[in-house]
Every structure is written in structure tokens, then in C-alpha cells.
Length: 473
Ligand SMILES: *Cc1c(COP(=O)(O)O)cnc(C)c1O
Image 1 (cartoon, rainbow, N blue to C red):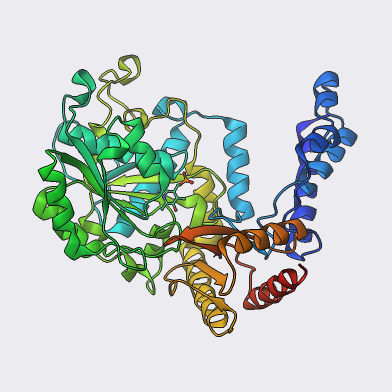
Image 2 (spheres, rainbow, N blue to C red; image 1 turned 120 degrees about the horizontal axis):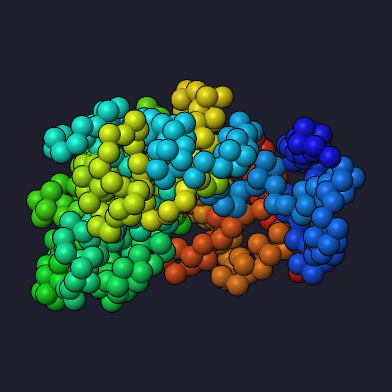
């Protein structure tokens, strides 16, 4: 038993797994009951013997891999999780092996440097000033900042923490005053509503911005909602907009919202967990016009950047707004010192933090920025083609024209329960894996075009399988 021989078994198994997913030889989803998997994977037996032999490793991998939901399968259309490029997975391996919990520079100079570099790369895409490689203390320079976080939900929470510190500088000593509120679209991600709970702002103080029939924020109605909040005696910690929304993948008008926030001196947070990657595309970055007016942006790499989970970024226009976010500092780690690098500890909820940047960096190193741009353009265009196709079928309907790579549709005649029952049948069959979403009080089937090997042909087959499954009453 050795690292090399074990690793060879793992890599070969993953390679076969990838090939049989890509060729559709195996099903995209295969829901084996939990109690059966406990037995099949011989979990207790492995722990009892503690001898990972080449045989038992191969056996385990075989069972484990056959129980996975296959993101590399072209019929994976369900969730906004990247079918990762293999190079990103190698980044995960390097990070897991070296285990440089890099929240302070001395625990991972290489990982910290990559994170610092990638944050600057992302800042440039937004049009914000990247940070100098050597920060001199207290010179009040203005430039952007950020941190990689374990997911977009945590990035959103961190943004809200920073925004709250700006409006209530003594909050860490005194606790919340009782007049804090948050403005966010009715269609915002649930992590935003959760953040109001976690921060003690309270769901009752979440003012939902008015949206049109596509679920997109109406700029002309911002002022009346803002006044309603003021009349209730509240102050907004921040105003949040979607780029794009989770349900149907549409972008809020950032330019108009940003101008409103400037006028009212409101912290403007853009939740671009899924859709900020359009900034990498000359063809689609217009969807985020006005993004530079924001104060903070959440941007996941594990969604539209072919990067394995988890790797998300919280970016801020002014680094100081994030540097001041966590008032309580771990003084034993943060003493004044002449430092060769940079410590991310004062910018994150996490204490020990994985070298998240390695995963994204490996993908970029393998595909180049150009490769990601092509991927994003392809997925967005395929979604439009699928929309045109589904729209022209007489028995299906779509609630909105897509702007990104998310597409909802339903069978016109059927009830919400019937759409859900259809999805259950498709999942049980395992040829296609899609999700569902409620939009404007109606249940839809939902496709997220994440896989670079999905084609329009797959969608045509999906539609005919939906019809077939529906007729098998
Ligand atoms: C996916 C998503 C999130 C949550 O990000 P995680 O990385 O899954 O925590 C937040 N907001 C939007 C708009 C999203 O699409």
C-alpha cells in the first residue's frame, strides 16, 4: 500500500467514470436507497479493518462512483454546480494533500498569493481597482479587495456583515440597534433572507423590492419602497440586486439601481453567485452594465467557471469596507509586524480556510481565460436555442425568455402536481436529471445548462421523453 499505487487506482477509476458519463453509458442519476448503500459500500467493514488494500479500494470506488449523480453526463441539467474541469479537481487534490489552512500568510504563502492574485483578476473584470502587491499600512489608498469563501451563501453573509458595520460602526460592542432593515428583490436567493435572520435584522425587516412579471426589479418603484421603509423608522443596511436570479436566471437593471443607491448613500450588494461570470464574455457582459456602481459582489467559481466546489468570491470596491467588517480581531495572529505577505483572516468568517484559489487557478491554467469565455458563450447560446425549440412546441410553455443558461418550462395543460410527478418519473428513469422551481406561483421544470457537452439534441430527446413519460399514466 502506497500513495502512488493507491492514487493510480483512484485516477484510473475516475477516468473510466468520466468516459462512461460522457458517453451516456451510465445513467445521469441513480437513487439507491441509503440503507442499501451503507451495506454496498461496506462502510462499517472498512472502518473495522482499516486496511485499504488495492482490492478493497477498487471495490469501494466501484460502488461509490456508481452511486454518484453524474455531472459530466450531458443530461445533467439540474443544478447550478459546475461539471468540473479535471484540472480543477487536481487543484483540489494538491490543496487537500498540502492542507495549507491559509488564513494567515505563514500557513500558506503559495495559496495566499494565488487567492490575492485571483481576487485582483476578478476585480479587474468588474472594473474596480485591483490591490497593489505590496500594501503599505495606513496610507488610505483606495483600491478593491475581497476574499474567497466556502460558497456564495457565506459570501452574501460576509457582504451583509461588512454593510452592517458601515451603517452601525459600534455594532460589535453594542449589538444591533432595532431600526435595521434590508432591501432585496422578491426573487432573491434564500441566503439573503437567512442573512437577515443570522444578523438579527429579522425577516420582518426585509423589504421586498417590487418586480415586474419576469421577476426583475422595477427601478421606478425603488423610491416608494424606500420611503415605506423610512416611514417605518428603519434604515437599510444594504440594497441587494440579482445578477442573475436563481429561479429563472434574469438580471436586474444594475445601472439604475446603482444610481439610486448612490443618491441615497446605500450599500449596494450584487448577488452574482451564478451570473457574474458573464463579465468574462464580451458578448454578454452588458447584462451587468452598471456593476461598477456596486459596493460588493458575490461571484461563485464553482458555478459558471468549471471549478469544483467550493470556490466563491466576495469582492468589494473599497478594501477598507471589508477590512473593517470584523471588528473582533484574533490579536495573536494579527500583531503588527513587517510581513512578507497578506493575511486574509480579518476578511472572513472562516478561521481555518482551504486553499480555494488552487481549484480555480488550475482551471484557468488549463483553459485560459479564453476557454472560459467560450464556455459561457456556448452555454448561453444553447439555452436560447433550447428556448426557441421549446417555445415552438404546442404543448409546452416558458415563463420568460432566458438571459443566461437557466431555462424554465412546463406542460401547458398540466397542474403543478403533475409537473412535479413528471420530474419524479424522469428522475426514477435516470436518463435526464432536471430540477423544478416555483415562479410567479406556478411550478415549472427547470434546466441549468452547466455541462459543456449538452447539445440541442439532448433537449429534443428530453422533450420527447417528457411526452412519453406523461403518456404512461
Ligand atoms: C447559488 C446561488 C447562491 C448560493 O451560493 P452557494 O455557493 O450555493 O452557497 C446565492 N445567490 C444566488 C443568486 C445563487 O444563484
